[in-house]
Image 1 (cartoon, helix red, strand yellow):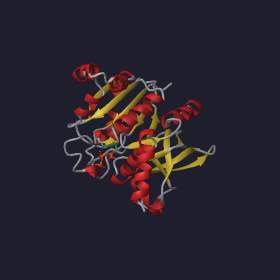
Image 2: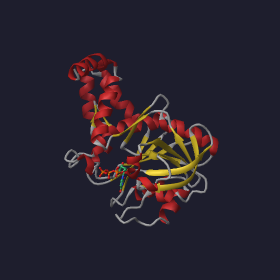
Image 3: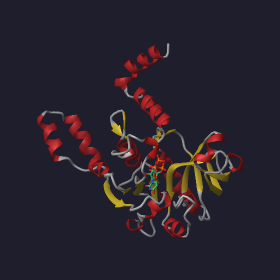
Image 4: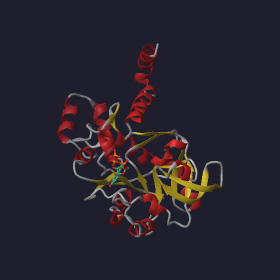
Length: 284
Ligand code: UTP
């Protein structure tokens, strides 16, 4: 069973400047919830009990968000705002949270390596990126856990992307072993469209074994000074990809962030009617 998830949040969020100058990009809300809360909820809904955040400077708001706030709680109690009180309490009590600092932003591979001392040698664990929000009936990580239970090997989340977008992602080669599962034979980080082995991109969900830490250590920095996780993943002898069911938004990209805000608002009963009427009017 997978009970631990690593969530790297140490990146600088430069695509979302100026908002991210003083606020972690993971704390920017979609409607009324910080993006990181959507990711944490997916993890705990999948059965995760321990979340390890890999953090950096200027990220203390994330630790505060996942901690009790006695002053706010007694204020809510006094004002009889019991639903709000239950909401903020529940979030904190659903998992244990640990925080590890990544002292320098040396890439996603390096960020994952920072969690090594908190992972058991025989333990498989999940990695979820704070940028990728996946809206699905069955949590995307849970879908991956089912594949992991069956194959007993690492699993990556995959999504088809348009050919002009492959250069933004890690891209895989592989053979279908079912309608939605591929046994992977190659992984390329940000290929030129012509050199891409497919249009199947790795999305920010991974189930990995402890071996990944050794692989990351053996992986050289790229020309930008970062250790890419994709390059370390290539060292696995057996690894699978899952085309998950669900819609994914890259919340670190401004256009996708807007889409996520509109589409997730339309799913909320209190907004559906007034907001769809508003949108119809706007588009006349
Ligand atoms: P990104 O490259 O998308 O995030 O990394 P970023 O660097 O914050 O954003 P931009 O591109 O400058 O706008 C993917 C994920 O890996 C984490 C980021 O926080 C993000 O969740 N990351 C990246 C780290 O934790 N450490 C790093 O050194 C790099």
